[in-house]
Length: 226
Image (cartoon, rainbow, N blue to C red; front, side, top):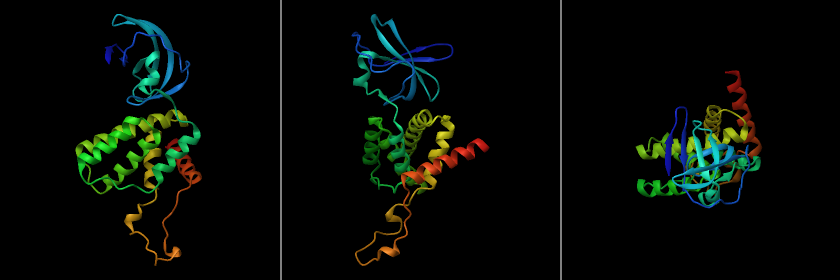
């Protein structure tokens, strides 16, 4: 990877290759890089860089409007993908509001598991990371590196949700926070139900996809009022 400094922006070149490749995306497409996050294809350019002539996707990143340049021939191998569609975004909101999964107590094992999910660049897996680490944060059990992983995941997902929902990144961050606050509690918080426990005694709320979307819309309305 090569970083070329400019006055108003920075170009990040990833995994250079000398072949042309077949174009997967068009100008205007919203895409997600597994490491750098979401952005929009602003152009497809031919350039001679590091003594190699090839075509590049020129991507404007949502997080800080850096310019990411990806060789067309390497896009699929790198894992560049289209932004999540509405059905997938609904699953993301549902995941954020669902019951948490218990993370390993051993910090090395926990962080390895978290990083494996983040490497996929999959929005639902990133949502799982945010949900579970946020629960651990409420218990004041995060290490400094756990906190960095949480912040990385939050920024990554907020950028994709912002492009997908048509809102600002800061608004998407607020929507994520409110969805987490309104999510269901982990079953462990009240103890697992036994065979002798009657169904009527279990009062754990369930957030449906419809309810998740309602919460997100409520958050957006409050943001616009602010």
